[in-house]
Image (cartoon, rainbow, N blue to C red; front, side, top):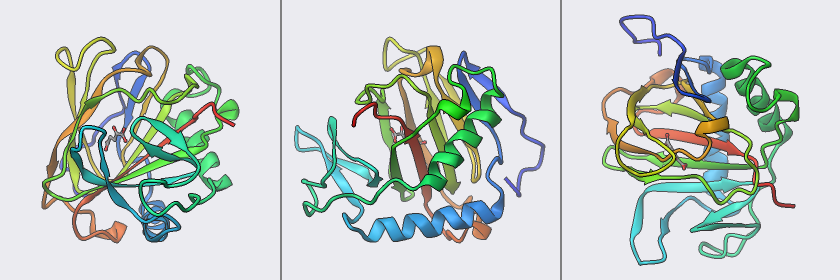
Length: 221
Ligand SMILES: O=C(O)CCC(=O)C(=O)O
């Protein structure tokens, strides 16, 4: 983060879970923000996901490659407008591989060259949005999840694979940060209890709010 007072260091938060601060250069943040703005318009526009019990998620989400609805992946946005979601672009596969190299080097739970993410979940948080503790477990692949953050900082809570509760670690994710979780941490509970409003990264092209992009392999064909 350009505004950080002190250098923030790469940290292994749990086995297989790595935080790389400021990994996305400003130009890449801007390109990603622009791409997300286009995806947010369609073919299936960004929306607040409605949960099976009737609850409405406070974040807004748009998907690329596959459409996530609780709790499965489909090709068409049946809970939005029925449109087939945008194709997953090759440049995003390359970005996912670079992210794995940055987090793990060549020694991680998945060789970067073998990583083939095919879905991106793009979440937009306004200042009051949150995400409860959950596991990413609709994927049939155990490949790592790559998470990229742009805009306002947040508190990201990274827990354990057994329960939504403690032990967990709270990590501040700022604009440009990369967080990868794979290997023994792939199915750890995680969530976002708080967005830190007023921490915008204006260079990214976002004046407020937080964007999070997770890249995953669904293991589906
Ligand atoms: O916004 C984040 O940092 C986490 C997003 C997340 O947990 C998800 O999309 O499943």
